[in-house]
Length: 202
Length: 202
DNA sequence: GCACGTTGTGGACGCACCGTCCATATGTCA
DNA sequence: TGACATATGGACGGTGCGTCCACAACGTGC
Image (cartoon, rainbow over the protein chains, first blue to last red):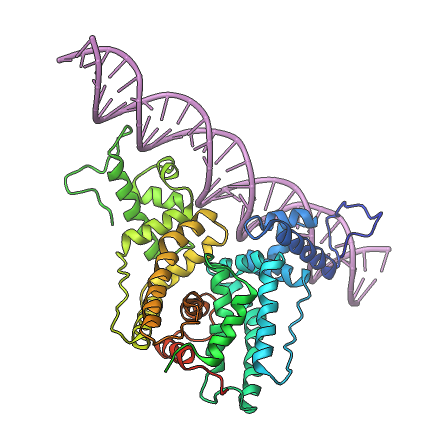
């Protein structure tokens, strides 16, 4: 989207320009660059160049390379966050985890998310933004679904939903970030089974 | 640290020097820098400077910033990897996970490991080295312990040990890399309980 | 004991990116 | 219509990366 309207010269004047327009240009270029070349090649200089904007402008609105990348990612993929509630927590968790695995392995989003999480380790602003705009909301949706399951009596009341989230989604991130074992839908299924039914014999 | 041995002039000649000696100097400097200033400040140029060695030498022996950091880390902390086997898989897992959590939260290793995993997302050589020398061996130890527990009848035979590893250690990495919820020994305890006894009511 | 080849080391260089300063062009308001 | 406020772009200094080339020590053979 937001391709300079046909006929409009790429030439960029010097003075003021509608801020929103420039921001949109930057985000579009950032998202495209991120999905195309990955986080490693994602540099402010490059985004500025491809957006036809000066670095100063970018620095004015984004505090770091990471936050710009995150904004660009969100701008590129209108992520839908709905968490279905069919009344069967096992089925719902399995469906969500499978979709998550497909997102990570079957689309460009996998490497991008991995890169963002990686970058967040040395970029405090990105770390905060990621928590606030990505992991936080997603975590809350899952926790809410589990609370409802507890109310329905499908999940032990003494089980901590937050911890369960880490054992389901965290396990997927583990295979994404520290590759070695395959990240598959089968794996997602096993995660839910293990957690609901237990792996111990006692 | 890394002051030339007493009496030896700090002067560095130009020509050849025992390779092992130089390597040791580099690793010592790298480990110290990493633990002191973290991954963000860890740069080849800085390591070279603090080790009294030229960058060329470092580039000759290490393929990337990440692999140098990993080597420096291992050189600094002689990590002991023993996995105790008391015959009670629940107790063993709990003990191991608690120790892991303490390592991540109570020592400088936490941020360092986070930084290494983060850097690995844009450094293929580090990613491979990390799998081969860090996550791989650790994973194998845990899997072996679980296999023994399966033989003893403490773990369901149809549970996949690899998946369980992701649900225990991966959950901890999740809280380390995407902070938000606290990483505590209580959390470690819940991980084991959830997985052994199940969180479902069915 | 000496010269020579081998081997690895260091300084310098070109390149890319970062972050900032200052001049300037435009939008806005009187 | 004119002056001010504001955002923008080009340029600059700084830092780190990766590489090229000259050179110094070590080992070997004469």
